[in-house]
Image (cartoon, rainbow, N blue to C red):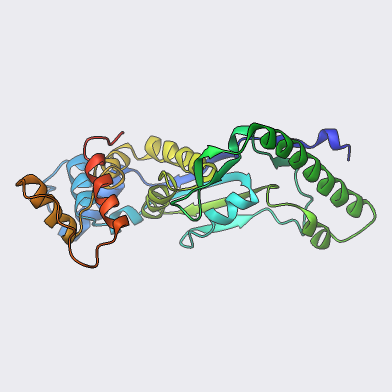
Length: 275
């Protein structure tokens, strides 16, 4: 293969709706079956769905199904597949050749390691001169790996062996199927600011699809889950002290500096949540 034909992308692929089952009304109907057939509903669908979400009655949300086709780099796919309640079926590089798409970051993506998040990026980036060199070398290494992969296939090497040279920046595709509860849990974790930006971009694409399919449920989830603030018992003591002008106690000897910082972040979110 001509190395010039290899596609280097700085985006993270896409998510596309394949199929789905159920609506917001189905969620409400699943809850009403508890009252037995023939009982007149006491609430409109929206009111009931919001009640279910507010009180974490999750079972009715499981009476749905959404199947998406996801295309992303392997390193993103491996994070996605940590969500074990979904069903997956991925393109196999034992049966087919790898696609020509490979992920490559922009210069601005070469962030320094975060000082506070051991697994994430900080806001600062490396020196621009370093970033320029990294972009060039990244592309060179990826093209070299892909060229060797193609050479092995042309020489008759088994696909299951040749695939071992491909980097985790290689794109893959897979079906991902789950119920609405599992999808919302996925979005809660992966749309979060602490998640890696590449998987967050995909997760926000998922959320866009879910909102189109289940607008009442997703709006309720945003109000009561995504943009909600949960206080622990020590947080409650701190909040009580703050409201009554008694200072902010540390909440007990087990409260760490990080927990206190998280408490301040929760207070900030009370007025900063965005829909």
